[in-house]
Amino acid sequence: MAETTLESDLLTRDQVAVEDTWDLDGIFPSGEAWEAALAEAPALIDGVAAFRGRLGEGPSVVKQAFDALYHAEDVLGRVMTWASLRRDEDTTDVERNSRYERAVAVAIKAGSVLAFMQPELIALPAGRDRGIRDLAPLPDGRLLALLGPAQEQSRPHSLMLVDTARPAAAAFLGELPARGEGKAESLTVLAQDRGGFTALIGYDGRKNGHFESYRLPLPAGAR
Image (cartoon, rainbow, N blue to C red):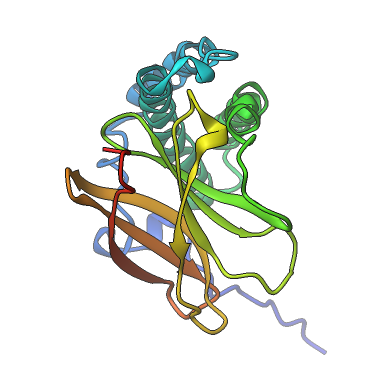
């Protein structure tokens, strides 16, 4: 009986048409550019870590810390994404696997070093069974906190305005309307003026995600 040789229908990267592949040049145009960003990462992490123990100094320091954090997260996110997708193109390639492992190592270090950010801001009067889901800085340096159930309690999500110089005086802004199985998980401040601010809330647990914007007034005396 003749032996049958089975051939895989899975194409290798060089067999796929260029127009059917992802273009990573928008993230990094070359391996050299990726290497430069990876080399920059430790200094960016140290730049954020320099704010450890200082977040209670006032809104301006918090804003500086968050600006440094968001810049570091942007660079680290692109470093990780590029390395991960390049590895996925050919998981047998030693160099691609090495780059991915180096990116993971830097990401783990960043997570460990920068873990101080939320604990230093967590001493808020959030209420029983509530925890912080996300934080967003307002243009004036104060923070907007998205609160939600600490575990799986049936508690509504809500927003709180926080001045890190006076955390005990945090102002409760109100509860978000229930959205079925959708859970509010992300928060972005779109704009602020003397009358109030506009916030974008992201929900998970729904198909393809879901976003809603809210226009809220600032509490009297908080402007």
